[in-house]
Image (cartoon, rainbow, N blue to C red; front, side, top):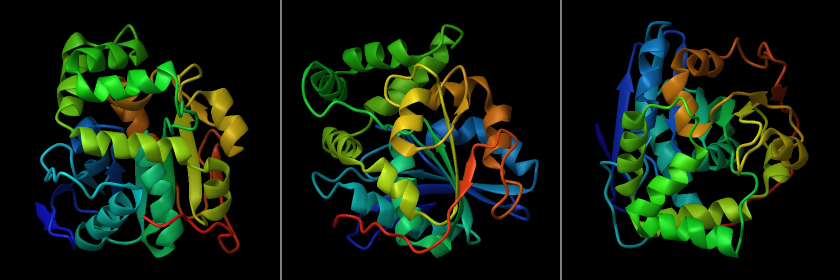
Length: 274
């Protein structure tokens, strides 16, 4: 389905399933589109959940304007998708950069979100130096993108899946990728965790280079579920496990690992303008 944002940008969004049990909205990782979520769709729809995906502007099959990118815009686009394709409130699953979008959406539109599932949230990223330059180079050069993605993949990942992940990420415009990177570098994770009022759960890899379990504990004050792979890779390798984690037990309920935090009280943090 094609949706049109208020500035005329056309967004590719898809929905599967009846939604009798609820709706899960997928917000993809840095440089990625909604294609990364497709492995989870059968496991959700078989349990009577609706699965909704979005290709953020500049990625996948959505429009790729020359300008107009930013976290605020991505949050507004996600809210548009919820309003058009989902029964509210929804479970929002954000991977990587999508975790930041999910947190902002839950804070700015709390009536739209019942639960947050944050997969490999980028809580630590270099603002400058060689690490930053490596990320910027990956945006511009598909060969360096392959090296970057391969370095984070587990040894069991199929090279065909790795190739598909890289091909998806390489379709993202440089302008969108840089805007996402800048937003992740500036993200106030602890403040966001304190601000959102819905239930939050986090999953990551112990040694993931931007969202390792140690960093999640230190910068978000939460105990994450720890999986062998993270981001795109755990989606490909353990789709049933991730799908089960996406489906909450109910409003305010804790998951089996005890890693969910139910927020309460008014949000104390005011986000920066888009």
